[in-house]
Image (tube, rainbow, N blue to C red; front, side, top):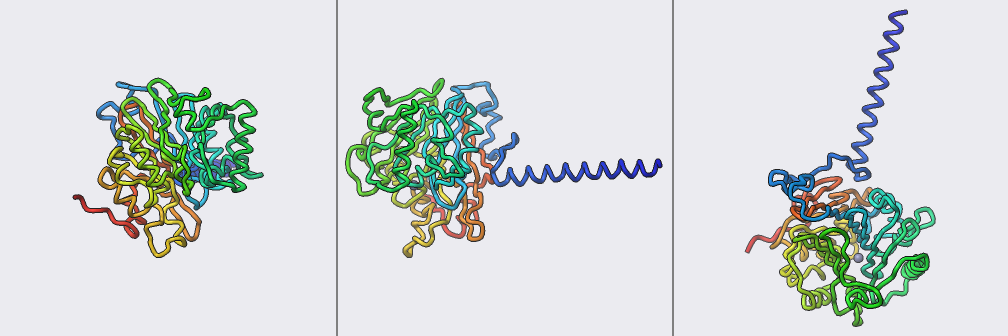
Length: 381
Ligand SMILES: [Zn+2]
């Protein structure tokens, strides 16, 4: 009898150990793929600033309210934009691409941080599908507008678009306004017109500032040039978002605004050779660059030049003089469609140092296998 009891105990212990191992393995896989965020995130070695006390967890010299800027993966191999900015209980969402079905990935991600279900500000840079589709969503994956209450929606003053996804976006945006949201264009914001403001205070020391570029008012044959541009300022730190603005738009942006040096630049047009121009880079001298693309996709559109594949060599050449801290959420995979590259990318700061935390890997773009096979780092000077 005693022997049987011991055996039973041992069996029970074995089952417990196996279950525990399964749970740990499951968590690890989910974390690696970026589906969950464990408290012990993978901090870049170069970002460990605890020694000088300016780390966000330090608290010794907090300059402003804490700020985090998220670049989540989009759930498919299409390049597109989505940025979630959070400070205190205030969230700002910029764009929701890349496809309608991205809503299935983005809504749960955003819900994790937007716990009250209210996005205080929604910025929509321009009317291309890879920036608006997840606002719409699908029957099985309700979009951003259906899933969250929106406070103020600020979008593009102009468009040449007549696509179904654009019409769907407008219908849902207007329904959101009907339900109580405020809707302005970036031009109204710039002009402080009709109740809109050029600058919004998000929390202590953190402001969201709309910039001017001429295609808010002028025609462009390239939809990308209609992109809304915004500068987020946190104490001495600046973070720049220009959507898919192309070279002509960037030139206007540089002429019309007194741009500061920037801690973060969300790469223009997914790292395209037609954006991220040398003039803009010289003004903002970015320290960290996030390229919202599925690295290496769209090879079929290369027209004989690998340079149009995101992130382009021209982009690398233009950014390289200022930084090699370049991050990319996903990588194109012929067998799986896409896999995480850096995964979900999160910047955070209390106004001092900015730390970067990635769900899949902390390797900067330059150190990646894809870079080594497809791109070169320009030699200094
Ligand atoms: Zn785009």
